[in-house]
Image 1 (cartoon, rainbow over the protein chains, first blue to last red):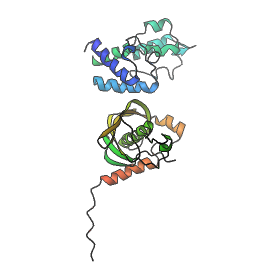
Image 2 (image 1 turned 45 degrees about the vertical axis):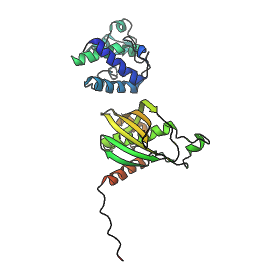
Image 3 (image 1 turned 135 degrees about the vertical axis):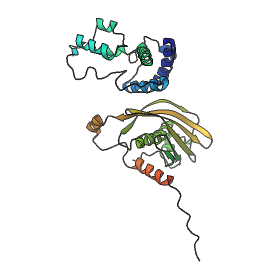
Image 4 (image 1 turned 60 degrees about the vertical axis):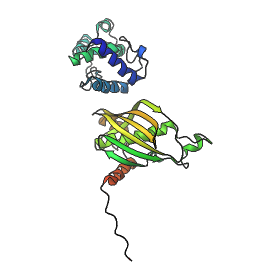
Length: 127
Length: 168
């Protein structure tokens, strides 16, 4: 499956899950910031991706909520530390971290979850 | 207040599908206001009936150990109005059943007519967090909903042999 084909399928699933228009679902669109996804929507999206692509997505694999819970070394003064960034890279190798690294404000971490991130994730799962 | 929007189950296949019926009566309070002189079953209550049918289906699949809550209705379409005197049939099928939650799709019909169809997403409340917030008591499957299902299981048993004709 090409990246374009994956994108088209992901787009359709997001249209269904989030009740957004097709043209709002661009590769750069952020799930929360632009498409207004709420926490339950992330679970819905995971279920849909599994059905659409026949893949298995473990809890907290695609949208790891717990990376920063329990380790104060990962976030200091509202910023993600070098250790935290390295953890992010390990846990989310498909994330585009370059822009975030320049200004790693913790409150902006939701911006990492873009449509493009899902496409790359699915691509990595399909191998 | 009774908040039971199905009358009884007529079919139940654990983990797969469930069918329940609901007879609409003029005696139901909502018809007085919705709307005066033109009684129409509120769409949200039709959806509630479907959610109860699907919710019990999902809950029973885990023997009611999980607290199943309606998390989201990704889509719902209403094809026509329904009013007093009609019997609605709610049919729900499991699309996805996982530890975190479940998805069902359902159709509501009245006789041959489609009244509504919807997809409903249920979440399993995290047991630890749920017991902190709500206590250990399973507030979702308390009382009447499970009683209805018990009746469904009774109804699913093979019919008892007919009584012998009265002598005399």
